[in-house]
Length: 115
Image 1: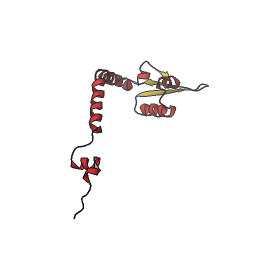
Image 2 (image 1 turned 120 degrees about the vertical axis):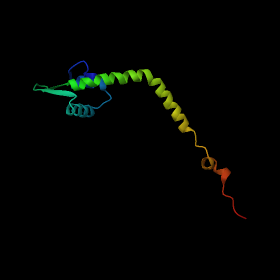
Image 3 (image 1 turned 45 degrees about the vertical axis):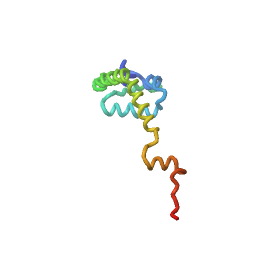
Image 4 (image 1 turned 90 degrees about the vertical axis):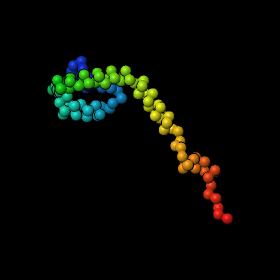
């Protein structure tokens, strides 16, 4: 979406900032956005072929939401990462209780034979 914020772009211009995304996935995403009315795709009968994509008025309405999400991330990312680290630290602690202690120290909890 943000790659199209400045106006019409060719497929190769969209690929440049999105290097981690394969051409296939980008094509599928653009087609889905076209299907949903978020972008228009214009193919020119030239050699070599040229295809351009542009946000529709409906697609442009999403830019406000994207900006809001980016602002939220900028303001709250540190707190989010701290909460994630705290959660993962708690998950790394072995559970308490008799069954957990037996599992952690089986040598202490061997079955006693009846005499």
